[in-house]
Length: 441
Ligand code: HEM
Image (tube, rainbow, N blue to C red):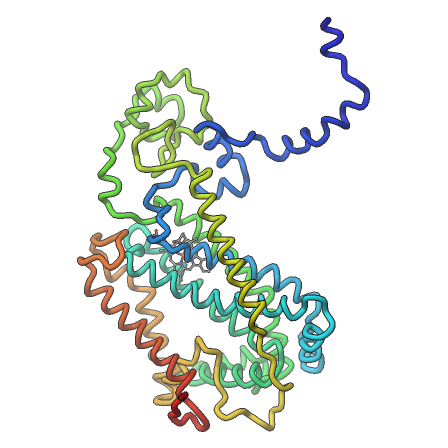
């Protein structure tokens, strides 16, 4: 009888192949229990980036609006479409524009690819800015998240710079004159201004050297730096105790008892274990370390700490944000084509020549004072942004939109936001030839 059941047919390795390959990649079956959910998150490379358990408050879409994730997914879309565009693009002043025409006319889905890349780039600048506003208005930059805010400010500047360097690549009139205006703003800085401009352009004016430099910065240097910073940014979100939340959210659930000495000897990484866990004899537990690490989230069993398993709660939410982001980019790319003007003509500057929209606030300020508008005020703004968490130290109003306790800070920030948006709108819609005020109606 045993011969009958254990005998393997010679071709059984073939029938078992799919299951064997599957199990060699995914070590856990679809999770049915808490241990399974915990194990699935912990042993999967992509899932272990997020915690095994996450606080309920962090899953409220109306808290984050998924903006940080959306920025990340836009970055991914830009990376994929950007690499595909690299197969066609040549960073040469004699070929770049023709390659744009090829994308439009001969390459299958070329125009769609370019649209996706263009609109995702604009979208990312806007979404990263909105994410920064959400973080500020919920007081989420306060201790212990000061440094993550600083990293974020760096990411914001890099996002704008990445978009700016990409702007030149089509080598049409729009690109050429926008970058000519943009880089001349840099030259208004005292002492180093001219050197910075020369460093960026590799020449006295925008030409082949500038195109090559912008290309290398755009496709290699900036994405690489951003990838590292985004990774550190995510890591800090976890190390800072997950997303910010109001203290009341934690007070609903009492702090667990300190761990018993015997349990501490069992696993050196454990600092405390919940009272509920202690009721069960620890030596009988077979959970991996993921079950007992007491971070802000990870516990064994249904510990009443306001957290839920990331699988499937967080995962489904992430999937939703991903789908919304991809759908948004696809729909916009279907209906609107990325602009492509006449090829570069250095003898015929458009009047007015305008920088990309996110720099039009700067350009508007430059029209009042070259130094203060182009360099002085923006530098002060960036320094103030970087210092925000070190100036505003009171641990009040964290984790709530427009908290009463933060009325002054939020009002100052909103003034900064509104002034910048108004300047941008004026620069975009209300400025005509010679930068004269015109009515768009
Ligand atoms: C490439 C740009 C960025 C990406 C991909 C990104 C991504 C994320 C993600 C996914 C989160 C967690 C979920 C969420 O809050 O939506 C987060 C949180 C955070 N981000 Fe960003 N972010 C970026 C830029 C920024 C900027 C510009 C700032 C501020 C200047 C910032 C500051 C923060 C802070 C302080 C947190 C923790 C928030 C909390 O605990 O509530 N990030 N970021």
